[in-house]
Image (cartoon, rainbow, N blue to C red; front, side, top):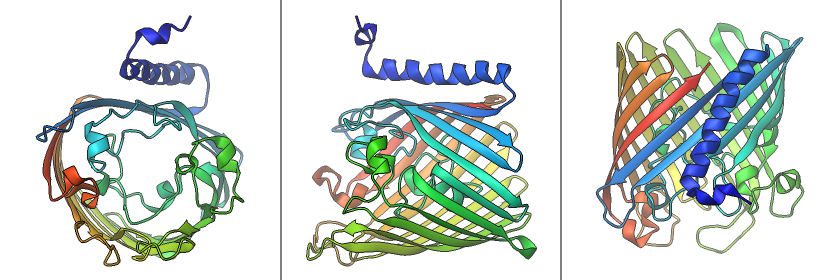
Amino acid sequence: MNNNKHFSPFVRNILAILVVGTTSESFAETTPWEITGNVVITHQTTNESHIRNESAGSADLVVQRQYGSGTWLGHIETSTTPGSNGVSSMLPEANADIGSALDEDNEGRIQLSELYYTHLFSSDQIISAGLLDVSGFFEQSRLASDETTQFLGTFFSGNPTIEFPDYTLGIVYEAGLSHGVVLRGALAGSDGLADNPERSYSQLLSVDDDDKGLFGIASASWKARSWLLRAGAWLNTADHQTLDMTSDNQANYGAYMLAGYKKNRHAANIRLGLANPDVSQAAAFASAAYRYQSGPYTAGAGVGRVFLSSQEPSTSLDDTDQYELFLRYTLRKGLFLTGDVQRIVNSDFGTSHDNRHQHATVYGVRLTWLYE
């Protein structure tokens, strides 16, 4: 008899999240391994009557073990099932945390997201290889990259013009030069775990399928005490259909820039990005974010726009704008309560008729527990 049938899908997934969180704590007490994790619960509502309120949760467990000059990292995560006609389904920019671990039926699950080995040849040369999140090596900022404790909107947790694969098989090389300059390069499969129709590991390992290709990216970073500057270029060789439907075997490519500044209580971030306008609706991107900290309070403000490709044949679609304000309060060490409000204009370029030229306001509350 399956007792889980007595619980709603949301409750079942919250129970799974709590199991992952409590397991990480007990495991840390009995082993010398380095263990970190988090549990995040969100609730969002909007002024649009056709969009349902949505409660969601996610959890991450990261286990690391050093062996000589190398380190193994394993990352397990789980998330609840996105609600039908809920905020995240109707306004995909509103919640970067939801739906990070889904099966082929778009239902929440527990999954192994990363398992890779990092080897330090020297303090200036590092290689990581295995199942990994490529974006974590190339697009992290000091301010706008952590949807668990900072901005929740997708325009402020990453660059939507970069076609990163989801957790995928790959290798990353890092070389540190003088004066704080770091060069990075990566080669990985174009289709990650969530990019395959069945979201299965067997499909992930089938790297030679006809429509798949490679994802390559290179960047140069300069990091000082207060500043972080990064610029890079990328290529995704998987088969892409052009927006005018005249070809279905084109590659996607682009370039990006990230600048961050942090000093005392203040932090700021700027992101820019370009992609191939022939195959990508999101042809350009720009965002700016600011954060201020005072005691247990942290406040942030962000504004971003994704520019629709000039090659898009539909005249009814247009650019998408996103604005976000958040206020976070530290309840105690590792436990945070965050309130935020977002304004999303023409969500997903207006591809859904209900979202065309819509000005949606989203109100959210988030409870975050970090384990370190």
